[in-house]
Image 1 (spheres, rainbow, N blue to C red):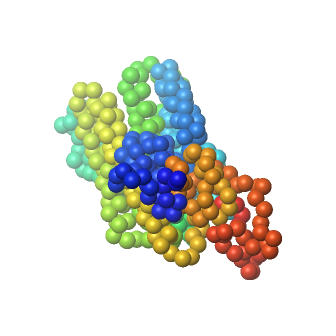
Image 2 (image 1 turned 60 degrees about the vertical axis):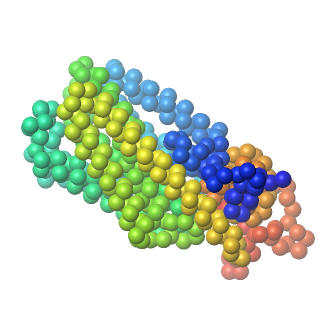
Image 3 (image 1 turned 135 degrees about the vertical axis):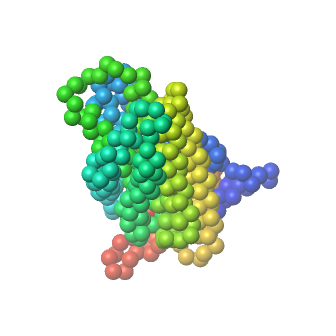
Length: 401
């Protein structure tokens, strides 16, 4: 007997409650703080563990380089750890066969160039005096209120606009109109912005004649961890929320709706909250460590927000598609296997009937097509498959978009 409906994902157990497992990865709860399955929704448990361990080992090496005083290496590696991992993930899962990873690499570079320009304007070209006041290590009495507004309020707001622009441009294209695509573009753009902003912000470290530093290494370790994990992921998850709201649920993108405006305001607001908190906490004893904890709290809120948002969108989109008579391009139309539990999926599925994992959240690569299945004698597509295109002669190529 099926445990979940293959069309809407509803549990078929008589004692099922309104709370169910996370549709992206059924072994987790919706309100669980699980980073990898949230920002990399196309991974299953095995591949998620691979990425998790790769990032942990890399982070330990970067912290080790910081402890040795190799700041140029440590800061550069910390800035690009999450973005490069994300690019590898996108290439690995092969999200879009007709528009592969180069699309996101282009997004990464365009966002990076814009981030560098905005950062240069704020840190060097227009507000260098205010930035010197803002970056000074003196007491709180020496902090300029104007500088606080410029770098903790105005800059994060402008940065969020810049991060959204290229990501929204891609999310409005027909082949990238799903909410998970919008989330992917937003995370990629946000982490790219964080990386290039960090390089501009700490360019004095890279231009210094000293390769090694021996002073204040304990403080530098906290700074590097903040740059490597907290800042990058706050930027990425915040923008991912906004762009996912632009994409909306189901087929086609929703656009600049009130829902997008609300989530964009949330993304911009948490960036402002993060930087104001980090700056003001820096004047307290153990201020760098308190700033790191503050960042983790904000990141946890964003992760839960994404998971609740994705859960609602996946379930609502599946119910909407199930109520229609036309075939969705997101459902299965050949015999495939669930990437989470490896049981066979029914034709026309939106969810696995065994574990309840959303088919919409899996990539082409992880959906294993049974090559032994034969087409009907008349050459017609399998049950639930869209008919071949009359102009191009193309038909189903083995999976869900």
